[in-house]
Image (tube, rainbow over all chains, first blue to last red):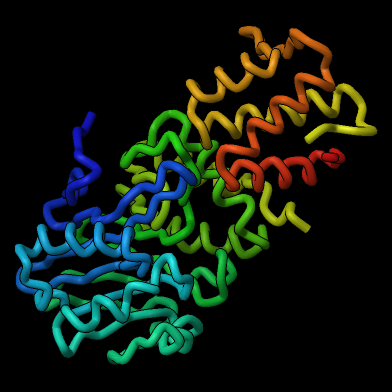
Length: 245
Length: 88
């Protein structure tokens, strides 16, 4: 059992440098999970999230705490698809992070980022592309088309064997906890089944993800999964998606 | 919200999945209270027992279930489609 204070940034258990800097909206049952990788003197902010003041303030303050106010340490930001709950805060962060910040997004999402008012360089990524920190730490980008958007991707961190899974393995739950609890499988279905429109696309994404050794799944919504990974992968294959037709 | 024109077996299967899904969305405490207040009990074997008339209990339950958060309503509607249940 890991104790945590959800009002503080949280170092993900089993890692030395990945922080959860998100928040949970318990009224709706929707949590947002931006993550921050701090690798030496470089940091990457993943899916920074909402620009609503009450949301942005939380993420901003948590990032500030981790970086002790040194926002310029953020040399990279990455968004795993184009939705506002991941991207809307990009323009707010880009003016306080490293002025030469680079933003990574799958090519089919990248073209939409300007519509948020993003001015920084956007690097479009393709399936299998790699990102390497100065330390040599490697991230692999895995595109997951139509799960749930054509421009979706997930990201594998080779150092910690962590999968940043974007909306895959996300959840809706008023009964939220940072790490998946015994009811998470149903909370996962509650989020995933209504939002994924193709079983074929889902199975393809899962096939691609399964090639990696995964120690933990870090979704953009819901809870972190670091136990029974195979159970969740198997459950995902059996989801009843595309019912809302 | 009520169920019309459906067989009892279909309704019960649907209700069971809605309850199961609710354990994820709401957690056991809220779900148990919601069932109790609606006059519905589930025994240890998973059988459904209605404490009042079945249509009244179901209506009460679905109204409560879908009123707390829109994500529960979304799931209720989706599961109804999956089970080919008419919600009215």
